Image 1: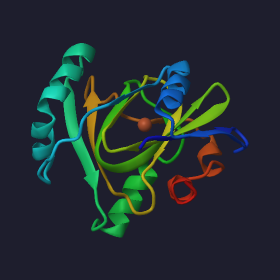
Image 2: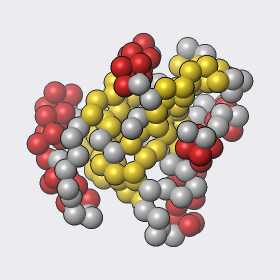
Image 3: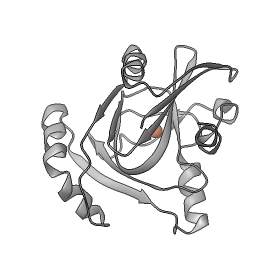
Length: 183
Ligand SMILES: [Fe+2]
């Protein structure tokens, strides 16, 4: 189930909830949309996942004009160096010129949305489709043992490139391992 923790910029805990209505209301206030898809059984490959959710994906593409969709996944058997490298890539605060839209078909990850002087840590789990608007200041933590499969939606080939803010705030806010352990 989705889990939202909100912190002040000094890491003070402001809100913590698993209530879907409360999470949706809080995210709506900052322009972030969270939807849920029914999970379906899929094979292990990216093509399997895209095929299993083809109908849902096509609806989102038609409604929101995404032109490219892919699948990123890591599991417990991933090479630790590969996992650490993947985690490090978007662990610092950044923005993108494109929306960041992810559907979690399996596993979990936390999007940290730094908006209006607060950090909204959204723990997404299987079935969650999170839409973060372009230019939203954020980072993502998949934890030290990543285990997730996510479908990503893009408007163009390079909108996903991160523009890093240089703010070290992500080092002050509890990380994926800490939040999931204390849940
Ligand atoms: Fe990002």
